Length: 295
Image (cartoon, helix red, strand yellow):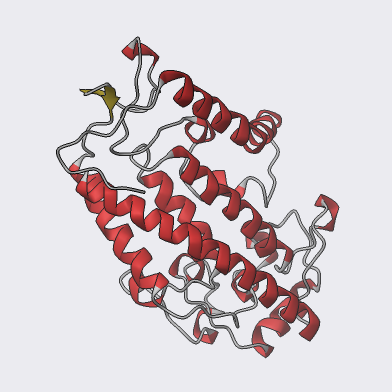
């Protein structure tokens, strides 16, 4: 693509085109959002599909909103018809997002640094999803995170696996949920401060977190990129829970039995596939975050 000189404004996106993009985005995310809202109305919870709306702070309604991202001009006959994501500013040919607040620009700079360092670090594929097991290790039954779902191997069998296999969790936001008995068993002791030093592209949770970093920079990050990160995180979460100690076969999620050599090989192969997808998304998100810092 030919770069425009800095004094030449970008062409405005015609109104019919951006309206189609906004409608396509809503149509794409509705199958993810509507079942969550319906379960909430019924007072039900789903340990796989609800996770991205409970662990993360992004609301379902906000995921439906569309934005072209920073620096894009939208043509509009009536400015009141523009997407309801920000106070749009007049620009040659239409309207564009305002410069992000300083807090958002600072976040974008931190995110860009984290993503760049993660991308430059070799991915690791030997954790086998034991973080979910470590979250219930020697835990009283009434304190188990998903107590409504049985442990496939029972409490003792679960703890036996945790104590038999090496735990190599590099992700602080998974490690912080380890039980007190499991924490000393981890080969790493990650903290929030060391997160940029330890984050690596094979980690399921680091790759799910691409969604978090994308929505924290919205609307200056395009909605389509946020949705792409969500879609990957949704599939990663499924593997995360299939490899967990819980029996979710009643929900149609057959286990990946990481307590066996065959299960660990299966997990690592799937993990590599997700890491490759996440690497491409990470590069896109890094570019978007750098644009936010300079917007």
